[in-house]
Image 1 (cartoon, rainbow, N blue to C red):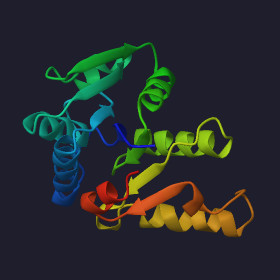
Image 2: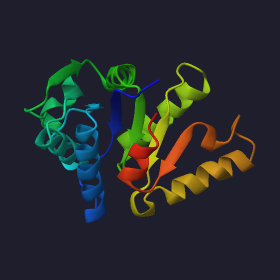
Image 3: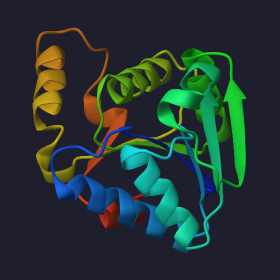
Length: 179
């Protein structure tokens, strides 16, 4: 399967380090250069806004998916190729995942963690088999990775994390590993 669309889950805040912004911008540029469609949360703030702005700056096509409740709070991006408004957060995640060939998780907060773990759960239950990538900018996810390995060591996972999640350190590494 050749990748045509990439769902990216990331923070609606920029984070405390410039590297998070830099990697979101670079990923947007690279996705646009490869003519891959971005499917993302539809906002114009934080890493979501940086990602979308850089896709658009480089001629990329974007589908934003945002629930009604967050339109005002996250300030929907006005320049997208397409904007889908869902009734709730769950429908947003499901829609984003249905529209993509692969999923990527950048740095983010509770929402990004929720999205990551729901995708991993769907994958484990064979609801889907889409590849999931984690961009571990400056070791942002090191503690989470260690914890998931601990969960496995303690016998709570059916298979190794690496079977479901590919961890990359840079946007270029991530792009080079896409099918």
